[in-house]
Image 1: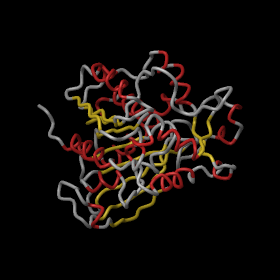
Image 2: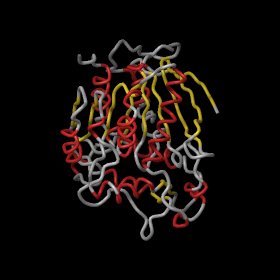
Image 3: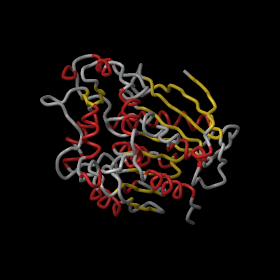
Length: 346
């Protein structure tokens, strides 16, 4: 499946954009389905870039992957106040791609997700997700006739992006890890159904809001999420699960492969990727109130990146794991943009 459309962004959306982006920038959006590593499964891919622009190069092509529970399509490209992070990058002259892994968002769902959760083992492990991410990277490289590009992941997606970069350094120009996952001390922040760890778990809107605000005070939460933004995200996200949407209350089903990996590997001191194998520039970035992947994870990981030619760790104030959809989200956008745009260190 392929679809193309042109979008015009209003003048107010472009406030603060650098690099000469027009206040009336027009973006082209395309969608495609890419075969997953598992036979019969398809990965949803969305692409945006400035209309009429076709020559980007490795330094201006980026592929984004989501975290453990929610798809990329309803976060990375959610037009809050009319502007998504995907729009922001595209308006800065980037050829930007997102993907929803199998079992998430607009991608196909394995047959096991139509059976009771405890009837099958956990779906979409980190190894499978890295393989699926590689399928999309190869699709973009072939489409644009490139040999490398920028990769970026959020939360569990950082283990996917970094896992891919650690074994395919020749295909990765720069690496961005937003809210990096590393070795855990304590309980998992994700909701897990009681009993046997099955193929998937169910998350309600109340679960999602509670997790978002866990670890911060009522005073810190005041005004953190602008009015209507949570509902806009939740409406878009929960609508992607046609089966879960008809349950009472409505739920989002999320594959449990990541939970199996966290319990078996990350909580046991066994990371799924080797930081010493990162040989490209890397940015690690997160917000100070991140409860899901607390700052101690990044601060433990950073010294282990011994072979990166350039590494940077940035902490943003007054934000949670989901600062991408909070009042200070532009600080995240701007810091990542600065890293991507910076001249290579020689």
